[in-house]
Amino acid sequence: MSSPLDHVARRAAEWLSGGGPMHEIVISTRVRLARNIRGYHFLSRADADMRREIAETIQAAIRKADGMNEYVLVDVEALDELDRMLLVERHLISRQHAEGNGARRVAFDPTETASLMINEEDHLRIQVMRSGLQLDAAWEQINGIDDALDARLEYAFHAQYGYLTACPTNVGTGLRVSVMLHLPALRLTNELEKVGQAAKELRLAVRGLYGEGTEALGDFFQISNQITLGRSETEIIEDVGQTVIPKIVAYEQKARQALLRSRSAALEDKIYRAFGLLQSARLMSSNEALQCLSHVRMGLHVGRLKTVDLQTVNELFMQTQPAHLQKLQGERLNGEQRSIARANLIRARLSRN
Amino acid sequence: MGLLLCERCKKAQATFHLTNIDKSGEKVEKHLCDRCAVDEGLLQVHKPPVSAVEILESFVAGAKRGGAAANRVCEQCGISYVEFRNQGLLGCPHDYDAFDELLAPLIERAQDGTAHHTGKAPRSLGAQRTPQQEIARLRRQLNEAIAAEDYERAAGLRDRLKELEAV
Image (cartoon, rainbow over all chains, first blue to last red; front, side, top):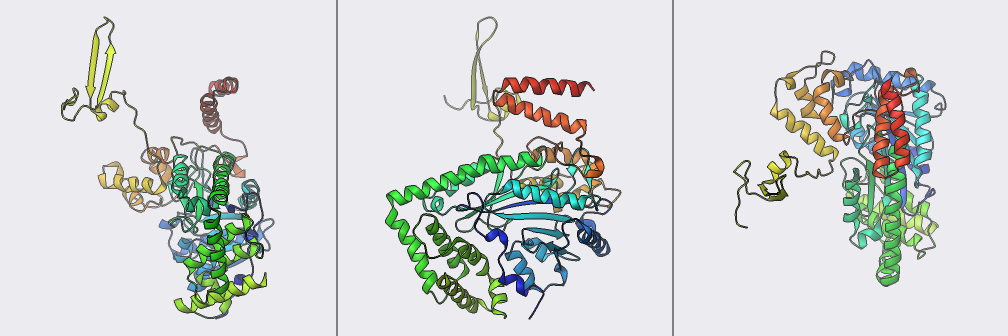
């Protein structure tokens, strides 16, 4: 079962490097722009021929656009289910894109920082992912990609409503800013609920690891803007990046320090127990791996674990997921086989450090 | 105070009680239910934050109410307003004009009351904002300045707004 994506599973996306401001709590920053091409229907009213034409038009623009000659173009429609799942696990495409119909493609740069989904909910969804809290850098990069394509495509734009999108909740800037947070201490102290409530009051959406429609899973929280119209792109970025996120980060840090002071044995027990499980288990489910890796990740930052680095832990979050395991193993695996492969992979990666 | 009926609708229980002194110095009491108090502008409804899902649900709920306007069809893509509300997705860019007066209130609700784009625009349209966009942006900044009690900034913004609106 070889495919052009086999090598992709083995390397690490740059946004998992574990760097960037506030990286101990902010896993990644993601920005995306929704764009549609003038003269075509939105996808709900586009027949197979029109979808193909849209895909060809955008693909041709990407091929010629400045700074995008090294982008990898993948025909998502032609991929098997496993390869699609791999792209979802790597956040290069959404679940909706993987499970969609008709002509749809994705283009991404070799570092997997930028990805362009063709024919998802809109004709074009541009996304940029970065490690830590890097909203300004992410905006600068995505703005450049958007400009490069704007020079070759005619976007659907409205004087009053701005960039027109298939769903009216994205209209205006078409900008969605999402920050993935790791908040284990707030979860242990039962304060996550409060963070979620506060975010909602600020008109921000709270989601899980895989974006729209997914539950907040384990200790991970994704916070994103809901307002896309009436505020400029930089204002939206400031709303999220300068007011909300630093407060939540400080809140989590405080909770970690408080746990270290008043319940250090309980906290250390969680960290070392998780590390022990990861180093020793022979069968590990994806949920157990997620929870243990989360506690180990916190252990790194409170100075309790020194034999493992952040990048390894970040990469394991991705590589222990089903499609990655099967790609790395080079064969289809059932649930139990995956639990074995997952436990083996984690043990090997942790002992190498 | 027992079960007091709303003096306006005379149906629901009065939960809102107001005592005022009128011009002649007489004490005037008002007893209203919540709904009538809102209608008379005496009680503010606190609007809970709206999620994208709730907005879509309201689109769908609206579709079921129907009405003549809901049967309108976009001449370019053929989608009807009802279809849009059932699926939550529009059929083509022209729908924003074809269904404008139906969409505008929904968009305003989803976008916290604003319905004017103030961000980036395609290069072909020039990097400049339209005056309409600039006015919307200044108005919002003015409101923010007032809320932040930054009256110096508010005065400056007000002057620029006046200039623009005069054009």
